[in-house]
Length: 269
Ligand SMILES: NC(=O)c1ccc[n+]([C@@H]2O[C@H](COP(=O)([O-])OP(=O)(O)OC[C@H]3O[C@@H](n4cnc5c(N)ncnc54)[C@H](O)[C@@H]3O)[C@@H](O)[C@H]2O)c1
Image 1 (spheres, rainbow, N blue to C red):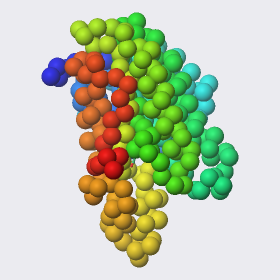
Image 2: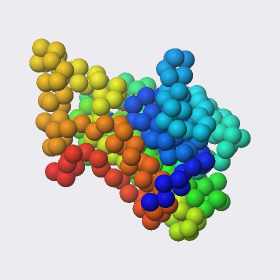
Image 3: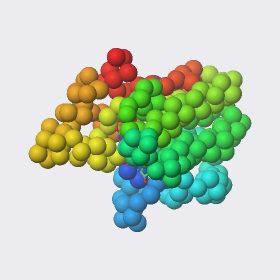
Image 4: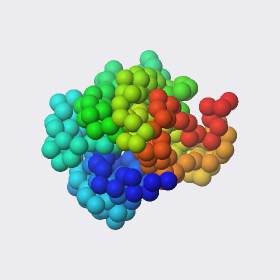
């Protein structure tokens, strides 16, 4: 495997101040990429995220603070980023969740989830893909979810956004399939579809289960996994990150338009 293939290339990872995105930023940095970190947080959280990506080995790290619910802010971020470096790798990882039955889902929450989980990826992709095609190499990895492949109750905007993200990725994979060559690495667009991953995003759902078993967090986690994820194990963010780095390698030039489940068998059922 060409281990230094990513050295000096530029990667934008949205939602990389926390959780899966931060792990992906660290792994791409460890592979030698210059990393554009995007995401919300306190100045201390953002500084800690940048430092950990630097510590992982990234030759350069910068924070681009766009709020991804705002299309104009995304355009401005992509222009700032282009002035820093051409984008070789785009990982759309920012995502939010809200659980409620459809009839009780606030309309504003629907709009916000669709904007952050789906429309933001459309905007970053439409602005980054032409440059990738021109240079003959580019990778878009969209962090969807098992909820882009199957549904669960009480997650209407989340499931709709993730199904949409997989569809959007397939269209882009087709539109850019012929760009570049085996030698340059081509342009690919894929989704990674995790089941449960241990991050702050799912803490409210763990807490809800734990409260039904006298606040026992471990029992709450077991209950959550028992329902849908046959392995009985959560994934770690670093495990998702390893797959993303592999997808960015030259050898993955012909893997495009896929939605890869990392879900302990959830969607095999
Ligand atoms: N944790 C899981 O079990 C799991 C499973 C499947 C898919 N996912 C997906 O993985 C992705 C990352 O989730 P996570 O678990 O790491 O969550 P997380 O809450 O730890 O991180 C979410 C990131 O998105 C950023 N973000 C949120 N709103 C934003 C906005 N308006 N503008 C810019 N950034 C914003 C946050 O600042 C943070 O960096 C999400 O797309 C999520 O849907 C997570």
